[in-house]
Structure formats: C-alpha cells, structure tokens
Length: 499
Image (cartoon, rainbow, N blue to C red):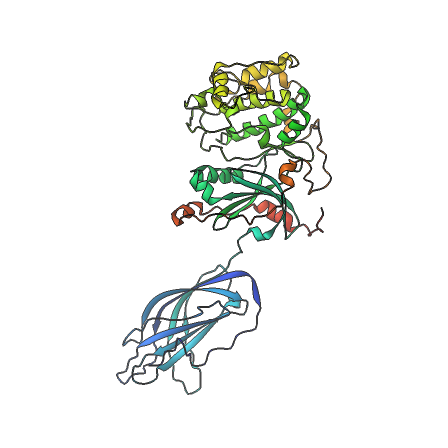
C-alpha cells in the first residue's frame, strides 16, 4: 500500500500570496462522498481522503479513515488548520486503498480560501476532477468548512513601559505607551499566583467586570484587559494629575473649599455606583486620582461588591482599609451601601486635617483604632467650621440606619449646607472650575506621583509562578477591548512620541 498522506500524487502548486497580518483558522469537515468511481475488480472501492493545505502551519496534511467497499463512503471527520498565508488553499484527494498494488487515484478538488468570506460557513457537495486526461473519476464530496480570520489577542508586547507609578501586594502599576498609536495609559499588572494564594479571584474578576461596565466622568475607564500564562493586565486611563494622597502629603491639608469640591465629585461617583448595585468599599485618598484639569477620577475597584441593588441588600465580607472601616464591618455585622458614606466622612476629615478621624498616634495596634471607631471618639481641630463638622458627624454616624445616605438616599447629603452653592448638574458636566490645577508639563508627565516609585526602572520581567490549570480556567473571558476607544483612536493619525 502506498501512503498518500506522505506522498501525494501531484500536489497543487502554492498560490501567490503573502503573510496574513493576523492569524486565521480553517475548520474543515469531510462528511461523505457519493457516486465515486469503482477501482476494484469487485466493482467497488475502499476510499479515503488526503487533505493538504498550502499556506498553513505545520500539520497541514492529514488523512481520513478508509471506508471499505463503498462508492458512497461516510467519513464524518473534522480537522482544524492554522492559516498563515493569504494565498492558502485546500486540496482534497480521494484514493482507493489497495494492500497489494499502489493505491488508485479517484479524483481531487481544490478550495481557494481567498474566495471564501471569513466567518461564513460553507456546506456543499463538490465534484472531484481528474489530475490527468487518462484519469477516470466521478462523484462528489460533501464538505463543510468555516474560515475565520481572528484578531490577534493583545499582549504586553503591544505596549512600551515608560515609568512605574505605584506598587503594593496586589502587583504594580505602570505608565505605558501603546505602540500602535502612541497613546498613554496606566497598566495594572497582577500576578495570578498571588491572586490564587490570597483567595482574591472573585474580587479580581469583579474589579474587571465593574471597570468594564461603569462609565462616569469621575471614574477611571478600563480600555483593555488581557492575560498571559502567569499575569493579568488591566489597561486604564492615565490621570497625570497624580494621586490625591500624594498632593495631600505635600500640602498637609486642603482648604474647606478644595475638600468640598473633591467630596462633591466623589458623591456623584458613589451615587452612580450605588445606582448600578455596586458598593465601592475602599474610598481613601490613595484611590482618588486627579486629571490634568483638576477633576477627580475614582480608581481601584478591587474590593468592590456587585449585585447590591435593593436598599436592604447586605454583605458580610470583612474588607477595606482598617482606619476607614465603619463599626458594622468591625463588628462583623451584615452591612450595605452605608459603608461608602462612612468612608466619605473619613475622607473629608482626612482632606481637611491630614489624618483619618480615628487615627491613634504612637500606636501600631490596629485594635486601638477599632476601639476608637466603635466608641465614636470623633474630635475636630478648632479650625474646622461648624458646617463641615456637621456633615462629617452625619456621615460618621455609628448607627448605619441613621447615617447620611441611608437607604440609598443621597438627597440629605447633596442638600446639606456643606454643599451649599454646588450646582450638581454643572458639576457632573465638569462645568465648575476645580480649585486646584495640578502642575502637568506633558501627557507623559509623572511629576505628580511618588518618586519612591517613579525612580524605579519599569519592567515586567519579574518572575511569576505558574498556577494550576483548574485555577487558570477561572480567568477565562478576562480579555476585553473598549470598542469606543478603539474606534476613536483608529481615526487619529499616530503622532510622534513625546516625553
């Protein structure tokens, strides 16, 4: 027997073409044949097919099973090929298997892929043809195929690392430039092994889900997400005004006017999240960024909780920043969205004084902070105005049922005298001028971030341990691309890189 899988009779020459810009896949089914020519003395044949795909990666030649004594064989076999050339074509040869003499040629057919509409399945009978004039062939082959030109998945290689912006137990954040259009982003890099070890898979997937779904002027937008075997990547808007925390540390404290402006924009952001059934749970200066225009952008949704739509919905996860935790969380009681309004009270206090309200000096014992929170030991410096004290007392109410913002009602917050003069409609449209404009020299300026981080050399070469396949499967579907951002940047001509 001659094995035509390794020695085809006269394979078709390669068609002209060139490398495809993106990988493509051909799924091919050899279903059945009919009316094939008889080659054996008994008036039958033992047909099999040899499939050769020119312009494909290795493994581009396969053979079906042999169907004995049939001129209408049923093969029912499926194959997949990775196509790399625009001139690729499929050739299907039909042979009669003979164990005593060379196999007999029963005809062939070709399918040029450049004439096929990608993504459209084709299901048809195709006639076989003779290779030479003396070949006596007949019949048809039933084939089904789907040719898809898939888009290459995004990877870290699509970006240039420019600077480190921050790092923590979660991973690192970099300033990056997308190579295709020179646009600047922030990239958050997370190690899968750390997420699995800390049992943070649910929180990590929730962060990506929330970032994908929320669109608000005072929140950071997710533009892309993708993964490697060992890491997760979130590509976000870059706010070059820096962290609120960085500016607060430099200036010690903000004026009441400035604290009020930031607090008002944050109220709108939290109100929006709550309307979408999301508790933020980690409101603090480190998670508030400033645009170069001076407006805030809430970031880092790693502790956020979805699915909290009803005013009576409660959760029990113990999480958050210790100095900002409300009493109901410390007591491990079920809690709701009131937690975020407690954190807003903490944030206003810290912006106006430089320290959280329940901070305990000269103590590294976290229980001392918890004890002060549970006692409601709230003390104001003399320079804090009565109206500012009033809203902080309302937000830092120990009983969540009496706290400002209870039952998803932001009206008492927005109508509080502390926010007198705020036009909320103009504010959400960014029609109110911020009281502070960060010093920003260029789109790549990192001067508003902590130099402790920015002086480090940016690199994503740090080793990350592999994880088990069953854990890695939980990150399926993590990849995402913001179509609106893709369409917008596709209309922009790439600009020269600037620094």
